[in-house]
Image (cartoon, rainbow, N blue to C red):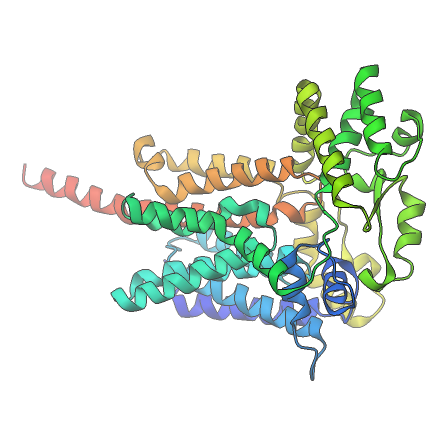
Amino acid sequence: MQTKPRHTALFIVFLSIISTIFSWDGSFEGGDIAAARRSFLGENPIDLWGGFNGFFYGNIPNLIFPWGLWLLILQMVCATTGLILISKNIELVNKTRQIMFFILCYLILSFSGYLTRDSAMTSFYILGCGLILLSNNFSKISKKGIFFIGTTLIVLAVAFRPWLFFATLLPAIYLRKINLKNLTFIIVLILSPLCIERIMYLTTEYKQVHPQLQVIISDVASMTCLSTSDEVRQHGIALLNKFSNTTYSDYEICGDFRVNTWQSVGGWSLNLSEIGLEVFNEASSRQSKILISSNMKTDKYNEIRNSWLSFIAKFPKDYLQIKSIQLNQLMISGDTFGLRIINSDSHKEFMSGLFFIPFDTVISLHLLSPAITFLLGIIIVTLSLSRITIYRLINTREIVFAFLFLSCWILNTSIAYIGDNGRYTYLSSFVFYIFLFLGISRITQFTPEVKNVNTNRNNFG
């Protein structure tokens, strides 16, 4: 029996309230988003976290409640509303499907309770999906308005990480036909996150410190330290030493190298007025040999970037090998997490840890990793083949989109790899499961009709 929409909505709201209460612990001044906010509001803002991130976090109010609490409430409201709207488009016709969807809601709401840009991105994206699905239930004018708002939220979500521009194409799968007007719409979608990023530079006097240098250090250090070729190692070390005119040998640099993070080799050297943390440079210099100075001139940046591209062009085999290794790290979400309840020091922390035990377990066992997501998706699709044809399956746009979306996300993330932090890929897994649900629901709605037609034919001989 299908769960009533009202009961589903109440359950999602209940999960959201509990998750919000237990997620808030008052610690919101650490991490990337706090640094992006401090920099944006400081004397000399830098673009280390991207133009849109600084603008967004810098404009969150700090009145009555701390800005971190306002951010948490915003993220939870967006994720909750989006999940309720999505649930109205999913056929929860049996206990198994109901339980699976409620588990997915719990995981999304638990992740949305983090104060990270990936969590903000998730909440905006989920709400955008929900509004786009909702627009199908309205008349022409209202439909366009709601569809536009949903699309805008999708674009804003992707603006947190503009290099994932392909993720803006979600609204395009609901276009009825491909014509010039819709092709223009698709191009606008792809370019929108990049345009937003550019507009932020025009409205804020950001100092460009070239955050893409992190990717360059990650690639070069990996190729250098994992290669058995002396030529590759010498070219790589020479390029790494260009950053701050050092003279390290390959043994000195590779002695600290770890494949799962660029920070085992590189770090940032920033001015106090740019970051607002006096201890930042001390920590970076202790941990990293290759430091990126925020005062690097454009000419030197261009020289390093061109040397990196030449390095890849000269040793493409080594580049593909290290990308394969980085891809494997991403596929298993190589970082670890742990159970919060173990480190609880108060009654509230214990209760919070108790509520998040399932989520912490899923993360610690890497069950949200792309590899497990692909595997579970294939199992779900295979089980569905007993009831529908392969043609019907691959002709269901939501299912095709789910697999393409996750594949493109992993490909882009591996190209821009600087570490194997699992949270970089959790949104792609959430969207994957949501669209599998939507696709299977659409097939389920179609299948009974086919059965009824066949039954009527048999009855009439």
